[in-house]
Length: 107
Image (cartoon, rainbow, N blue to C red):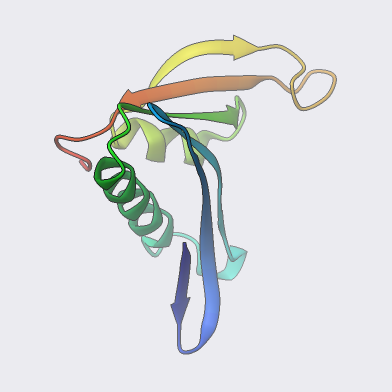
């Protein structure tokens, strides 16, 4: 999914669907467009799409030092499932987060 305004790309979300689980591979927002709700809109749309596809859970990996992304995911009900040490390179761990799909998909 893409987010555009004034014919300019503002952000993108990449999802992979399995029979029961949706992997949120990434949300990317143009650095000049951050803090305007684009990431929230993309995440909400991704959760809606996942619900229409009938998956039970959405999971993701996020760098443990990415406080803004972690706050966004927590606001949408994601919880930490595990930590993968050095996932993004030495000293750069990944937090694995997940949440059920359906129900209240936003704050």
